[in-house]
Length: 614
Ligand code: ADP
Ligand code: MG
Image (cartoon, rainbow, N blue to C red; front, side, top):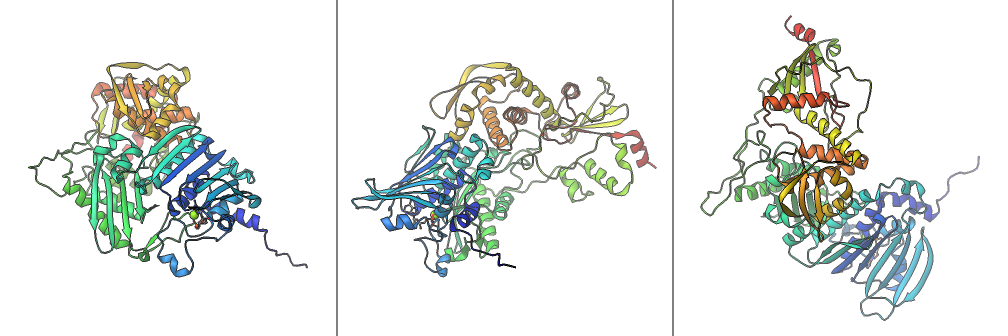
């Protein structure tokens, strides 16, 4: 048999390797911006067309490259940042693997113009799918200008898997933000399809954060500062009342590099223990400075995960630093927020005594329950036990209960529109429901006891209502007597601009004024007494989060609106409210599941109950 193993051509090898580094347009943005920072640029412009699918351009005023370097930079493992393996433990630059440009050039058409400081002429290089197309001298400004066109032009499968423009652009903004938040001393601009999204001038770190997320953030930020021999921790945490159900405002930077760490995230969550409504995430931007010898950055191709030599110490320091910041700013809840929608904070005055946050008792804790029971209601735990011990119990339930293993934000399946559901329980509209645990409604039905999850039920009702409104284009607006002007973040502004027509159908009467401002003239009828700003803010955040989860636009909007305006757990309902909710639920097209495919109700059959008393 002949030998069959051969070396792959370099362009193919590069294309394979590119898969690790370049997953989407945002990956290109990250790499090019990081290179510009490493080249000492103080001003960086990012210009993007069609969410980066058509082109991504990064222009910097950094060191530039010589003619030879300009050619060399596209070679794999070509870098100016390290020389020997020991250097791996002294890294202060963003890049060091020397593979980003080789990877990008393997899967796109790249034009590079670069000139070193003081040089009379610069160089231009065109490279396409790893093949050099042009190399010549060129008159250009000092610094470097990379234009990356038609990403994945030669890998149709990768191009096919790219998401819609809004989603890809969101990823780009995420990467852009991670870089600009670490370098407040630098100037940045981001221009998308000709319109300016961000123009950021040199500023303090706090000001940069506010410029990125919007002015309202100024009052939310609580400074954190802790200096130890192992690590220096600086930055900000958000006050607990600014926490959100959606993630995306949690940032760790280690030696000016954005990293992800579920372990360290846990340390922060622990420090906030008892201060956040359940399921909420606090805002944090924490900048850690650590001796590079104490970390290993070289464990992930995109370098967003790192290893700490003494992870437990960092954990403890972070935990303590955040706790201390919370204590110092006298942030501790005065009310049990399971009972109220918002949480109230004591307002510090100069005479207030500074207290460490205290641990609150979980009102749902059941000393006789198992670990899982604590999270759900004691009833749910009880059922779980029956599930283990009683054969054939399932048929006693009219609806198969699906056990929640993940929160909806983390895992969303598509909307259930199944016709194979059991028929509705015979329910007397005058029956008197009870509310238990401020979470479930309990009512007698012909076949037994019906338990309805108040939050999910209401979301189902609202989801269907808002879906209808979006379909017909008719929404009920409650006009506001004194229109409110609200400042939103650039990202929220982009999101709103993309849904102006739909948002009117949902009942919002808005005028987008100059960038990042919106005047609210009307809000949807029936949303109760929320303030327009809070409602709009929650809605856009939910929508931004939802639309990333592949639901179609209309469903994302309806669902985001349902989440923002629904009754929540912990809310006490009056008898007429409970009756109304049940009535509306049963009038739904699909009452059994909330729009995120979680059951809204279960029925405990009378025979099942009888069995318990044997
Ligand atoms: P790495 O950043 O890991 O070194 P890259 O492939 O991203 O690898 O870049 C290769 C080299 O090209 C860098 O080490 C640097 O010397 C040079 N380079 C890349 N981008 C720029 C830039 N914007 N300005 C100056 N030099 C650059
Ligand atoms: Mg690089």
